[in-house]
Image (cartoon, rainbow, N blue to C red; front, side, top):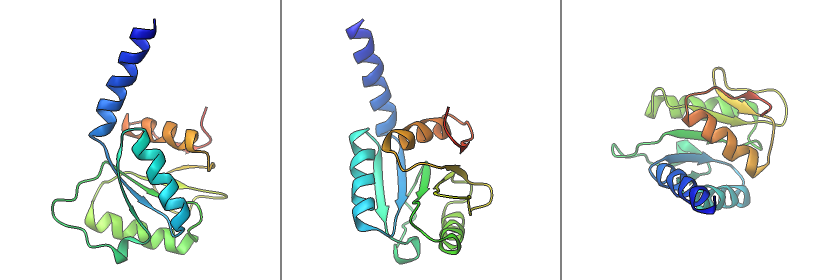
Length: 134
């Protein structure tokens, strides 16, 4: 049983190591913490404070963008527009304290790293995340 569980975890980490996530937070502390959580799980994370301040190259490819919960609503919508311009069709996960601000984005009402990782797995598997996790 331990071997099976270990192999499943290794397979999960192998898949996640191919996944690139754009993580956005205006808080340096939260940006750093989220990047550590994502990298520990095996994801390749690029963390920025504001996508308008970041120079994206033609080689930049992402599987998901995360917009943090401490960003104000109008700034979230502006950032989502920038992401959509550079990466059309890229799924966006909005972290919320209250109501979601980004039309069409997936969202969760949680600041828990464990919930974040569950939401990421759900979105990458092609399922929508709309609020609270089961």
